Image 1: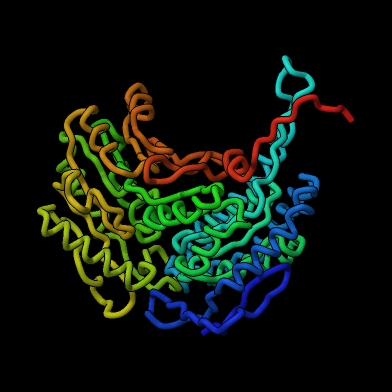
Image 2: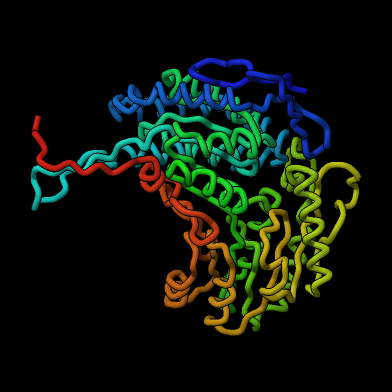
Length: 479
């Protein structure tokens, strides 16, 4: 078990103000794998004060130098890839091969995309030909509180830290207490890259403690949060008194609309996408809407694919899914699977309980429900586990109606070989992202949703803009 680690504040590792230990549990074994300290108000205040003190100097640092430091960060990050992979597999259950490629890979992907976007970004530009003496300046929002989840740790940390650093913001990161070890390794990479003291700070804590302290702190100018819609609502309310900027990337209940002209791999692809990361992705295609003419065959295929998905210990190499993150999530998923059965959906793969051969660890059977409708709980709630809900439809109009009939609006998916239909669907689906025929979004594409899936956009140019204020200057004095 890893011994207790401290906080990174003002360029150094510091002990917590008072003892408040928290055991990090390995979900593959249900055994403690580390002990961390949860911060208190004194620790939060110290981190915010360090960020506030560092802000004027960091904002005044030429953007070229800030970009160069993020480039150095990317280089250092690569050298810690295996450490990060091992940490994430141990603390949140991503299988080690997937952790090395997808979990660690997401971090370097985002850092590189921010560097590319920043080099072309107009941090200062003329208003227009009609106003030659007016300028538009993009400057840092200020002190940013970054609150990140356990399911894609490096993905979310780099999406926030990379953009904030280039924008000129100083930061306090509060990672999930369920998966803090990777964040502390990341803090070491920030230190090695040479960021000035106070620009980046890390305090471990839970949402009710450090999370609430940051979102309501008068010296925090912005909160960037990724997590549940419930927590996002609470953060918004807590931040309202100080009118700080709040960026939210929340839950989803994505529809994967499979038309009768979809390619032959569409259903298999959709099932495997749903099961990736053990279903613990806000943009998972958790509702598969299938046109009636191919529905029965699609259900048969989905069941076969789910039954072929193997489950195993996160630290074992190979192609399998790992456990879900903790007992609370495991129990919630079990309850929702049972709810699907009770409400009349047809269980065609998986079900309640652990997979065969497991009597310990938070493992869930890859599960598929057929013959569901959009009123059922399993079609309404974000399950956040390897559970797919299949719903038949007849017409394109009905598919759009079902897909949009959700409080969420993060990602929808469309499988069709008809370009005109694809374009119609892209325009009619109410979500921040739409992906077609298994093609994911390109480098620098914005990530984010609408409705109860949140606001703001992460990644590339849009990610930079979220950490920038727009300042209009009239009567510019040319230097």
